[in-house]
Image 1 (cartoon, rainbow over the protein chains, first blue to last red):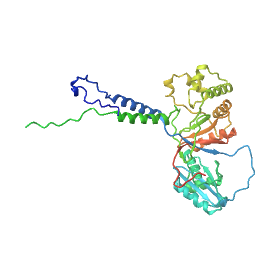
Image 2: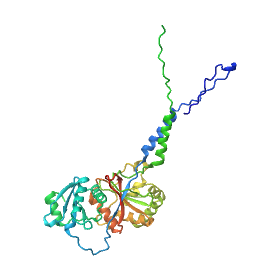
Image 3: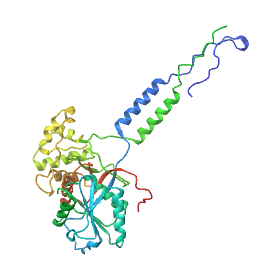
Image 4: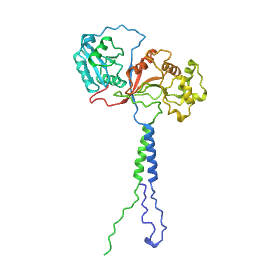
Length: 178
Length: 208
């Protein structure tokens, strides 16, 4: 404490000598508190605490045409990002083979769907193709990329063009305006 | 019988402890926080579990607002001036030293180059009120009207070590993001960072 006990200043003590009365050393700290909180308020309002994080995104080089072996449809989970925070996926069949179109929300539901499907095929064969549609938003895309990191799906691709079959499928079954 | 007097407590409270607390907090805030930059638009980014921090310097930020407007910014003031010089040379516009200085103070902007001169001429208090229309982009990424490609190209010319960060709003539509992506891919930029907020990974999740 900033207070010093000065004892019973003044008065007559032993010996009967008259001592001069000492001024109190106690200081009023209130203005200092005011100043401190004023500065705190300023710093809270003018600064940011959380530093944003970032995820790296690598896209394939468009100028190079690499010959790759076609992927079997039975190993592919194609995810379509729809509107109203809904995602649709087909698994194991191409869009023209009348596949079952499943609807999932983002987050836990989506994660579970990926994990369930990943178990059905050999681990190194499982591929996720992410197809954002015109009606989907940026958050949906980041969410899905994030799910890829969470489920540790190594093989995934972000493809922005829908094939005519897929478009028809989404229009018929999911009633998407695309 | 004398009246019992209630002993009054002293009305002066010892503020020393409170001063200690206040200055402790103050020290904490000074040491940890960093100043907010004045941005052209408020952007709410989605969050991800990624723990990679955004680099502090040598970074260009392409921001995508919720209405689809594109904003561009480079962190170093020197690079901003060099970049403006390069772009101005291509577009056949010249900027005065004062305009260049004003431009170098803008952390990011979303104005077509044809309107930039008029914007820089505005007094400071008016600048904040102007609704910036965004930088023109397109889906092919290489058209003449695509000004984002000029900014990206010339900022990299100004500083070759610039890393690219994309900062998109939650509600930005995918086609708008695709335009930005196409612009970058047209210049053979295939690796960049997406700026996101931080969220906790699910329990038991470990990075590998």
